[in-house]
Length: 385
Image (tube, rainbow, N blue to C red; front, top):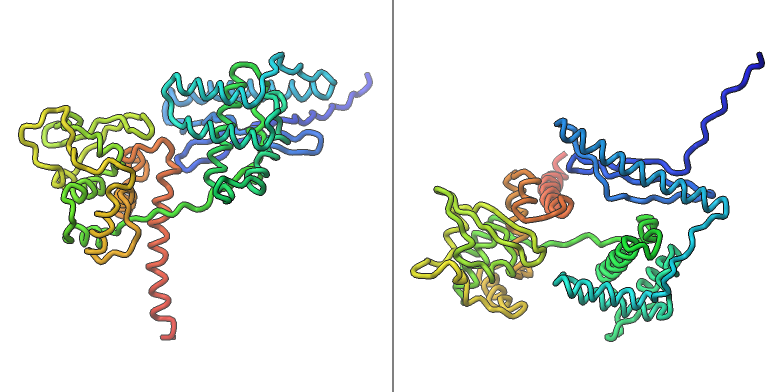
């Protein structure tokens, strides 16, 4: 009998890969190598630590979904190689009209970010007013990115800021995801862009008060007692000014000796349920005969930046030269918690962050300050040896 050599197994053009995240989970992505080109597609699927049988079952279901997407991508590549390209969608809707439908849908649902959609639509019109939704491929997206980065000039003669470009590209991504879900396009080309092809956000600068500076602010006089109380209250609980303005007495729940806040955050529309420290309670106004539906800080300036004049003069009275806005109270709370060695995950929940990476920015700030402090020793004793 003739010996048959074992045929080597053909390499798959699409492979499942994993990226380890700081919270212990793993992000799943596809690594595609086709026609000499490599691309990555993050699936927004995550594996969690398998500490329980339920976690193992969840991970198994997630892997089934990832393998199904992988198989679909392999079939798409095979069809393309055989000349069996997908037929284009029957609709001839323009990208401009699709953005309008996307905007109208947001309006009906009362969702946030509608102005960003209109601004994105305007920039896309400047880039290619006649583009069809079916024309939007990877090259189109790369051209749009280059247009925002190097060509477009705003009405005040300025280039778009990097964060603005990130916002507009994110809006386009959301609109294209919606088109994929409605079977108008087969896939979202933005998901095929590499990290280097997208915009890279600059390192975020967050101004905050140290514990020593916070003590100086407490001791210093302020022309507006309501502003001072509200700001210090936020320094000890991390609430945004938008949530402090609408905070009502009924939102504070007493649970034995512990008081808690139960609200829906204005910015994210996510529920927040957090305990209040005794220090934070010191800066609440005295409650006399107010009803549960009455505002706790009814006299706070309502206009954007309305607290700023009083805050800046107050900081000056305290001998602090930092640019103090109301939002520095939230940054102060976050950095203070991490400085006092609070668990990062717990701090994330206290702030109402949906992504731990957002909270990690504060940890980086605190670690940098520690490094700077140690560097002072080397500088002080550099000439002693």
